[in-house]
Length: 274
Image (cartoon, rainbow, N blue to C red; front, side, top):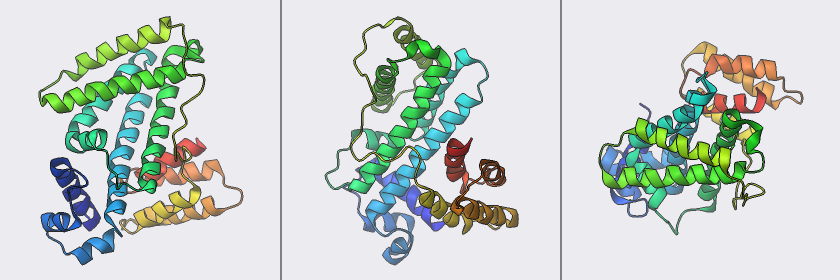
């Protein structure tokens, strides 16, 4: 495990127990047994650490849910799988998920807000595609309302999951939410939202190429595999080219995506080029 991952794991545990604002860098370093100097070699600030945690947390949710839905062949089962996977992952990250949903920090930076909104937009895009896959074009014009309603149901039941501290039958919950979503998708007639809600500070649904390149370069430092290193370097060169070729990008991505350090950047590139 890398020093960065040790710090992230310690911070998640402390944030869940004490809250983000109440946890200091000193407490984090003491918890994982390193010096403040070692902390600042990994993260420039507490804000940068929080951004790294949100990237770790949200990217895992988005990728895992999207992969589970994509691998489900039966169209009618996709929505059920979406709910089961979402609540299963949230239950695994209960402590930090609860902090993200409940805490209102006055010290959170604009960059952090932008990062959160980036992930929200990406998750909403995946959900919109899922709803069209399941219900077809009959949800045209009401997809924005449906996305808000589905997110609202997930948020409300997730809060119940966190606050009750009791075992919840996730399969039964998923069946219930599929039924509710289906009733709305098939039978609702009135439309409130005519376009998606524009989040303040929201960035593009896919980060700029320069950000992906930086991520690939950083991931390279954790890999000792020659094929991975060569593939990553070729991929960076291809992304920097004036005429980036999708077939080359996707071929190189297939050499990297099994390494969890590259997985998120490979996922983003597949979204962009597939």
